[in-house]
Image 1 (cartoon, helix red, strand yellow):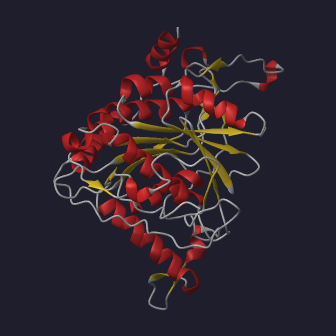
Image 2: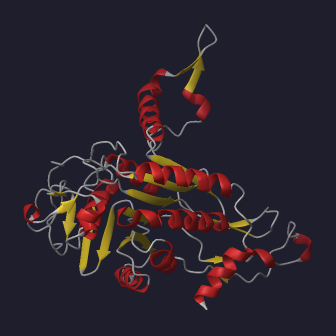
Image 3: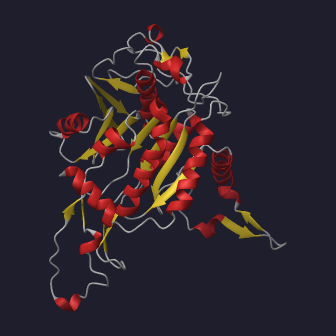
Length: 377
C-alpha cells in the first residue's frame, strides 16, 4: 500500500517545470565532484580549543551522555578522509532546507505552509563545504541561504548608495560583512562545490529529492543525505484539487487532506541505498522526543536522527544513532551549533564508509586518524 501511495503521488503530481535542466546540472555536478581527479579543497574544520561547557562537555562543545564507540580513544580508531586527495573520491551531501507548501488550488491563491527559516540547513551547508564536502542544497525559495546568515536585516536597497560619479557602492557600515558573504559564496559556486536547487511546494520538493537521490546512487558510500527541511505531513492530491480559486461565497471550507507518502524508506532502500542518511525529528514534548527519534531510526533505517525540541532547537540537539545518544549544546551566542553537528556527522560518515576492511581500498580512501574531537572528558 505504501509503495502504491508513493507511485500515485509522483504519477499525479504536476511535472517539475525545469526537470530537464535540473537533471543536466545534477549529472554535471555529480560527475565533477565524484571524479577521482577532482581538485577538492583542503579540509577547513579546525581543531577547536574552546573552553569546556557544562559537566560533560569536551573541547569541541559536545556533551556525551554515552561515549561513542571508537571515539573514547580517538587515536586508536581509523577513519576515511573526506578529501579527494591521492586518487580518492570526494564526498557529496544533499542538504534539504526550509519548509514545503501545500497548494489548495491548482492555480494557487491559498496554501498551507510548514514554517522553517532554513537557518539550520544554510549554516550546515557552510560547515559541510568547510569540511570538504560538495553540497547539493535543496532549499525553499526565500529561505535563509548559505553565507547570507549574517547580512543585516535591512532592506536590500539599504546596503547600497550612489556616489557623486553615479556609481553604486556598498555603504561603509555593511562593507565587511557583504564582502565576506560574496567572497565565500563565489568561491563555492565558481569552484563547483555548491549546487542550489529551489522548491516551494511539496510536489516540487519530493520530485527534486527523488531526482537528486537517484542521481547520487552512483556515489554510493560517499553520499550523504542531511534532511533538515520541514516537510508537510498532509496535502491535497493534485487530481482532487480545485482548479481555480476557492470562493468564499460558498460558505465554510470543509477539506479533507491526505497523508503525504513517507519517502524516507524508499530513499534509504531504493533511490540511494548505500548513502549515509540523516533525518531530523522536531517535537514540542520532551517526554516523547527520544522515543520518536528512535522509532524513526528503526522504522526508516536512518543512520542518524537529529532530535530537537521547538523551544530549544537553537541551543541543543540530541544526535541519535544505533546504541548512541550524543547531546550537543551551544556554549555561547557566538558559536554555531551546526559546526559541532557536522563535525560529529563527518566522523560517523567516515566510520560508516570504513565499516568493512575493503571499503576504503575499493573506494579510494586513505585511512587516517580522525580530526576535530581531540579528547573526551
